[in-house]
Image (cartoon, rainbow, N blue to C red; front, side):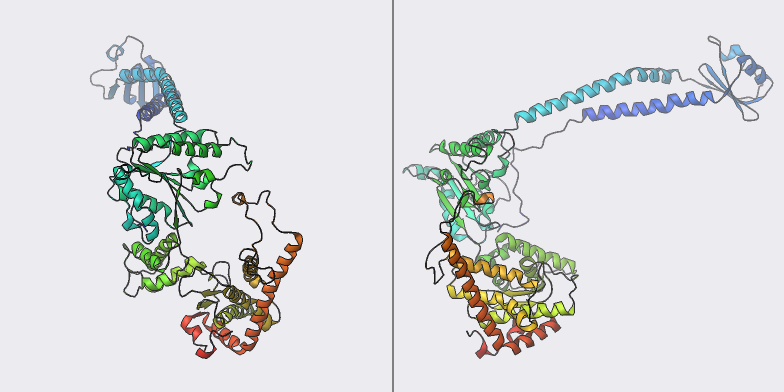
Length: 623
């Protein structure tokens, strides 16, 4: 898998748009002027109304009598403060100066201050007159720009939203960054070679597949593998999700498809990658939304564009999905997505390699055994393993350690696979005892039957929604299951149910999920795998292609009511036989059941070594 710290480089031609802040500057400047105006103008008016106004002649006479301690002259206004610190206001007659009034007598101790505010008054008058006009013009400019942006966005609505990754990026992804998937990488070697040396193939008339469909479960690395193909070939990589084509307006998706393929042809050789193509590539003809809905138009445009590729056009379309069964048949025909690459869940060797990739930039303690961790993670995808390593790093940092210990990885496996511990969920002594006997019932039956996987851990500490956990781990990866293995697993699932019934005389709701799982397995044995002795090798029921819509629309079972009754009887017989077999095993080993359960109540957790210590070698794995 790819290094988690590795980020795809941006296309060198891409530059972030420059924002025009001129309107913001104008608005801030106008706001400052407004504050200054209202801070200086109205304040003086309010102060003047609070003063006592006297005639100018009285002010001059009292000045001569020495009744004032200070006089301040501002244009036509004269402010006088008497010896008792009272302020008075008088207005100077127009055209008369201070000298004409006699306020500058020699020998008079009263100080006179003259303040000229004619210039500031002029600008305040200008501001009061022009400020509303300036703000109105700025508002019109702002609205015009917004309308222009709206028009541009309307014209760009049908443009492709694909992300472009440059071929010259420093940190491009290659096959070295993809752990495991050796067979899948081998299937894509020809694609890489064609993009590098197209003339070698065209000279002899060979045509490389125009479309490559990557099929695999979620988290297996389909997107990463497609990016590695582009990195190996050294070509641009256009990445887009299938859901980004579909909008509420009809025709937008088709327009974006056309724009995407036009850009790709201009940058050929390159790769177009459509993730989750089932969002637009689902089978047509179910009548959902008619024949002209947006999704079908987008699909039709993709088919048309892929047909329009010429032999000289070095553009390869790659797509990924985890639901190939719902794709339209037209997508799968030769000339379109005619090459299918299956990406399986990683096996033991692949899991170890993926662990090494994600542990490259993390300090590991010497006690860490990645091979042992890989053995404990069957069924984990690449994304699950990345999450596992990250959870271990978080746990180590939480405990103030500088390195990741092996115990951190084991705790992370349990957290990712079984759920976090619920230490706050307090069980009563009675509930804890029932849970202990229930879990030991699972583990004991699984230990005594050869078809069950080895018991890895038994715990009565709550995890997720479960009050207790019995963890079985296979010794090796298995791809086929036999009838005997299914029957032994059914016995193990019923072990908790029967253990409660034999020990306490009744059952609780804790066995509901086990019974549900057992019923599903028994019904699959009869209907999907033809493992019923009474009904024979017949597959019952037909899978509707509309199942992805959430229901089997218009589908009917391919069997009669009489056969349905026989199916129910066959399922019931399988479960009844498993119940009887489980009951006999627990009755024969009732003392051992009690011994292990009491030990589990004391320790709360039994690991594989502690659990196996209860079994002499001659008693294990006997029917």
